[in-house]
Image 1: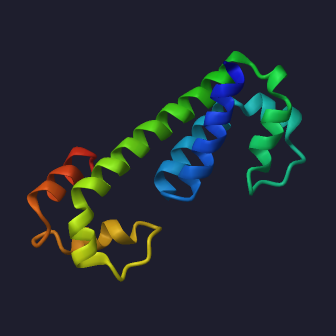
Image 2 (image 1 turned 45 degrees about the vertical axis):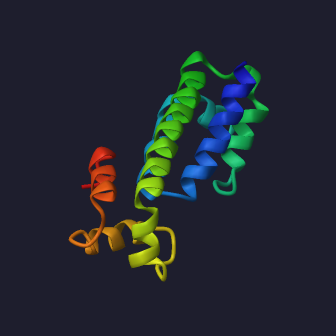
Image 3 (image 1 turned 60 degrees about the vertical axis):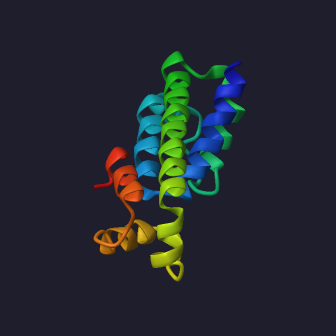
Length: 136
């Protein structure tokens, strides 16, 4: 069970780091604070990037404190919420994104900015979804 949560956290952080800078920062901060002892003890010489820090934590998973395990679990929960919100907005705003933002590159908040730039034109469903997840 412990490894399952750890792997979920690894996938979560990888997914978020490629999806939203804000969400990634929040999740990375959760792990960095919760696993500070482990990061300074076992992973201090690891070059950050490409999942190397998480691989280091995984390599030492048998030595993680409860606080670090909880931080990894919490990061996975945060990701789950983020993915649910993203899925909800994507479903509700699909037609609007195709209509107004088809030529916009995904990433770095560009599609959200496009929807915001077209706020007067997008559907009520999309507008409500954006409000529901706190984007508006």
